[in-house]
Length: 468
Ligand code: NAD
Image (cartoon, rainbow, N blue to C red):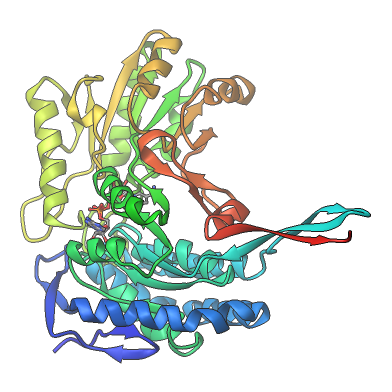
């Protein structure tokens, strides 16, 4: 019997069945998670709806509860981090930092103003624009940053006065179950519910009559299904979807100086980051040096079980993703790409893959055109900057991108021509609670973080008091 239970109406709840959660570093079963029955989802939704009136009524209580929630995460960061490493694979230090980061995010929102703007105050009327909560939010998360991405939803949604039902990915449910358990001490029953199950549980949530808002992070394909499921009921949606982020080096970039940052932003979390660098465009004159510098970093990276000291990159999280990365790399090599580093899976148990730098590869190869979401980075040559920009933009994705140069002014001009939600100069993956994050085109609808993320969990209400 699993030690992990769901949280429904503030109670610890088991399900009629369980499913296995695999430790990607060993391929063994790490633990079991409850497989929620449909009636249990109904109960979670009903609990969230019942908790809404009291929760929305007391802003100070909400801020206090969020502060307490953040403090709990700081205090338990190692304990929850260990669970995260077991189910997700990332090194323990990174997992612990994810929990600490979640606490930092909650603290930011706990202090964020809920604006009440006076837009008219004259002899005729006193008119305010107020942000009202929506009701129950259905939150659905992926497996790469299960805890942090849940908090990106929880903190603003709860601050605004909504209540929530969270469903994590079936690959990484344990840390979210633990989150529900920990927060039972500081949140009133029903305000935050956690249910676990397979993909069908997600579909039940998006089709459920109770939630007024769906906040979803995951793949483009599922995001489209979520949007379609929300449409008949006109549920509000925020969709944070996939990316195929380009990094463009200008001809004055210094390969030795940028290689460290490029490698870090491509291989963070073993490349399983929505806005990681997924393809690098390099001018002909710098091409060999950039490939060599990145290959040296890849060859030096220590890959292993995230529980071992000094490991930098863990396994790929799950078998389907491991097979997908293997397939995209093999396809590129079969079509003439050169593995300057890595190029294949690592023998033995677990879903380990060599950190891979692919040279002599270009647009048209699947690994350049599609989102690989793993530890393999294609380096593409260009001879004309406008053409490189056109190739960088010539995709359905539009999450983020970066431009690298000794001349930040010039790089800024180029970056402003990228068609994506975040355009970085001489950095990539610089994310912060106050900075809105979202995608153009198929990479998403709406944003998370900052006041703009908070507004996504509210409806605008005009309160018009006539003086006539
Ligand atoms: P996924 O779309 O397969 O699954 C995401 C979640 O949706 C899971 O909880 C899953 O159980 C659930 N789900 C599956 N089918 C559903 C349905 N029909 N209705 C409702 N929910 C359903 O994505 P994944 O493989 O877990 O995550 C990887 C993807 O997430 C990548 O494409 C990555 O780029 C993207 N991602 C985006 C961001 C961002 O902020 N933009 C952040 C992290 C990951």
